[in-house]
Picture 1 (spheres, rainbow, N blue to C red):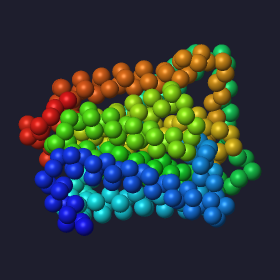
Picture 2: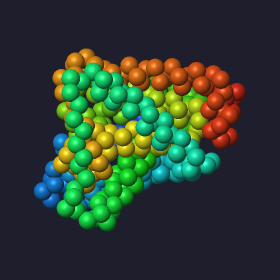
Picture 3: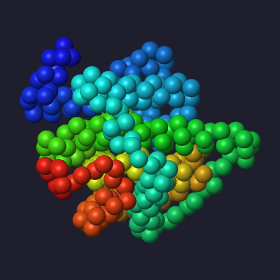
Picture 4: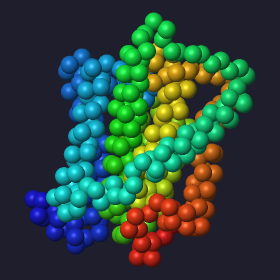
Length: 305
């Protein structure tokens, strides 16, 4: 069966596209059976995503199980269908500096949106949610889990499945903007599976996905986009979280009241659009190729953006 798929995969572009998209859908969609399995153990994962995530053993177990399953699916596809190593999905090159730069850029990007919301709020209340009755060592333990086991792990899973894998395997065969769009829809749809639909939230997720895709495509570094993704999530959870979620990294809860709905829903989208223009500009100036790309020969690409 695998040999037949590989034979068709090599011969037909349509099969390439379908196979890659199916692998991505499977790696993201593995969440669905896990949600049902979790329910058998009395664990409700639906409605328990993002800021609503409750730090319990059951939730953490299934969260890590989901990540492990997703990575294994990508690894199996790389090994048996594409005959490539997992390291070829952007894991080559330096780790520390690209991750740090990405983290800072992501933190700044999302902070701009929060500043816009704060400036347009009628009132702003900042609450220190550090639990005084909890030993510092206990809090540090939870925070280490939050940062490494939640923020970084989550970013790794999503960037591997919806960015690195599809872009690396399709970029020589189709216009990258089509790949970015398809992955943006899958990325946004996967998040909405555990959360209520909101058009502003959906567009924001889609635009974040597009930003990550562009940066990955230009840099060939998964570490850079993992860093960006982590920086964005870190700001949101640490400073804009909920007072009941200190176990998930919250240090302060910023409460904003009476923000015009159009600003609340679409300020992030506007900032993201401007950031996309900045990324394209930097690429035209050779920024990514000079500082991040590893074995990345733009002259050999069929498509350019």
